[in-house]
Structure formats: structure tokens, C-alpha cells
Length: 395
Image (cartoon, rainbow, N blue to C red; front, side, top):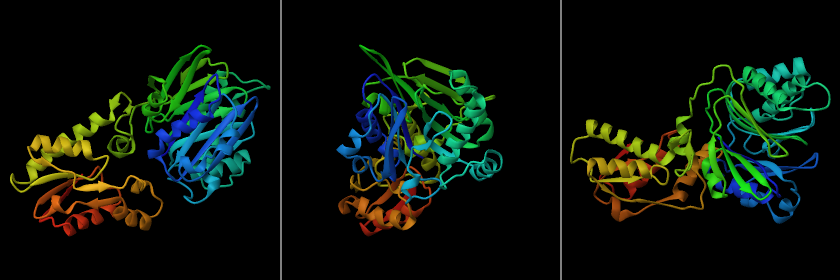
């Protein structure tokens, strides 16, 4: 699960991409990268760390150009420590391609074998993004004749990527001297949206994982990229789009609405905040069926993403709502921290219990989800240590 953004503008995009990645930082804290296209060349800087730590003034000055893309990474494949696996990835043929993606390929190992045996392509990392950029590069090579490139060839290459690749992927890519490409897997598992901004020089476009990145930078939300669809914006700002999958269907990842996305985003026409309120309603009905009235004194969220669900649950059950845990906002999201030991240790650094809110009470804790269960055990123990008479954990 990562955050991606791509921009075609009439002015330098380095600062715009940096600001967009800050707005998407919640999607990945392991590494960050930006690549820009100037004339027919690419400039790129990427490294492990948060956006604010990866990019210094000297790095920003080295990223000229009016088109570019960026990514914040949470590693779901490969290594969490190797800077070589920070995105974007680059291949020099055909034309020169820079690519970043959000998702997880389920047949990456099979594709690696195919590319070596059939395409004679060597991969230097364990990242499935390197697999994806090489698959796309091969298919673009097959789709083109001569030295020029048109949108039809780009869409033909994307269609072949859909046929070969399995898993979830939302992709932004730059083709040197030609333009910016974005596409989504045929099931629409990972989100991507399109926005625009009208200027005196013409329209500017942005592709991003979440609508919050568009709105925060003054772009108007145009629409979501459809499952299987590809959008190509050439360097003159002309937009082309085409459905490249045979039987696309929308099957978004539920975890986007539960935890990953910011609550002020809208994904595939659904408000993330409203979705979390609805989850609170459903949870309230389950609690009503399974726990006798009067056994709960107070409802508390595990901040931050479970807060809307907890508030709605308390409202529906006519229970008191309290903030019993205070979050240290300078500790990262524990789910996307690499390594179970670090996640477990970070829970107590991240959360602190207010003893007076727990003492002698039967507390219903509302968490957004239980992924590994690593943090839940620590949180329940913290509630008990703070004096809770009974702790009921829900999600």
C-alpha cells in the first residue's frame, strides 16, 4: 500500500509533487521518491525515510521539468531497508520509462522467470515494481514500430500488461519526451483519481491515489480512473483515455475505507468518512445483539481512524463517548512500520492512556481493524493497567 501522484503542468512541478506526497504520507512512511521529465531527460531523487527527510533544497533544485511523478512507499514486496527498492523505477528502453505503482503483484515470481527466458531482461531487486516496469517496457516495445509513439500504442501495451499481470496495481509512468500515463488494474483494487486545474496557459492534470491530494493543491476532482482504464496525457496537455481490460469490474480494497485512506478522501464515489460512520452503525447492531444492555459504561476509539465508527456506535447505543487514549502524532502509523518488534514497541510510544477515564469502568474499545493482532494485545493491556474494570475490544 503506497501513495502515488503524477502531474502534467505548464510550470515546474517539483514543489507540487513534494506537497502532494506530504498529503499522501499516511499511505507510506518507508521511502519516498520524485522523478521529473525535462526535455527528453529524467531527473530523479529517492531514498528511505519520510518526505520531509528525503528531500532537501539541493534535491528539489535538481528536479527540473513541467511533468513528473512521485511515490511514498510501504513495502508489501521486496525489502523494507534497501534504498534501491524505493520508487520510482527507471528503464532506458524503449524511449525511457519511469514508473511508480501502488499495489502488490501476485504472479511476480512467474513474471521474473518469463522475462529472463523470453525477454532476456535482468532484474536487480526483489521489488515487484521493477517487474511491472519491465513488463510494461517489453509490451510497449512490441506495440511500437519506428521511432515515434502514439496513444494507441501506449494503450495496446497497457492491455497486454493487464493480460500478463495478476494482482493489484495503480500505476503512474512517464515516457521520456511523450507524456504521463496512469492506469488501474481490471478490478480497481487500488484507487486512482484524476483532477485538473485551469491556468492562463491551459489545463494542468494530476493523477493521484486519493482525492485529498488534488483538493489540497487546488486541483478540481474530475473523476476516478475506472478499473482497467488507462489515461495518457501528452506533453502538450492533451488527454487521451481508453478502457484496456476485457471484463473490468470494480472490487476496491475494503481496507482503503477502514484504515488506509484519509477520512476526507472520496474513493470510487464513496466518502471514506461516511463509510466509517456506516461501519460504526453495523458494529453497534452487532454489539446490541451480543452484549447485554448495561454492561458497557463508555465507548473509546483507538485513534485516529476508528474515531468516526466509535462516535457513531456510541450514538446508536446511547452510550458515553470518551477519548481515553491520547496519540503522539510524531510516531508513525504502526501498521506500516517494518518489523513486528518495532510495531509492538511503537504502540506504547504512540498511545498513552488517561487513567481517570478508565478507572473502575467497563470500556468498549473500538479499533478500525485487527491485521496482525500485534498492537491489540498491547492496547488491551494498557487499558487494564489504567484501571479498567472490564475491557471489550471490537473492530
